[in-house]
Length: 113
Length: 114
Image (tube, rainbow over all chains, first blue to last red; front, side):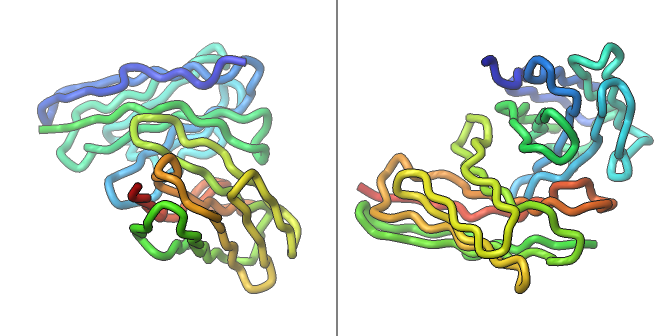
């Protein structure tokens, strides 16, 4: 089966610019996650969707980050405006349900200059 | 805030050496312990999922154990090979956590020299 797809793989922007990342989960997986992994840290959950509804966005900086999964399949994560501290790898993962094994995409490496 | 701790942070070994890493996690509201292997520029790859105290799992030269009562897991690699070079992440599944249901450690970066 196809894995979790993410694009772009790399992105370099200047601070205060906007950026968007895309994720297509494994077919049939109801739960989708976005994680932020800052260099030297473990991945931190930003938002969890169950189908097209938000289950947990408690660690999403809502003043600048937004995410949607309108049709319950693919998802977009946006940062507007970006700050230097947003430089990180953004990982998307999916699972059959909220407590099942999560399968990860290759991530998008964002550099904010 | 719940923490998952991994040690060591990094490890340099020679090809053929055996090695092990530790993951410490909060034992309350625990439901699963995951180990992932993450090579640079690739997707994190699931190695093991363990749920029961005393669980032991093995995949080739890699094995893992779980102690849920004291809140730790060990990952062992026997006869390390250069292709084992990667960051090994552990993640603890917690019911009802405010940080999400999987809390990750910072990882152990393994480098295996030929």
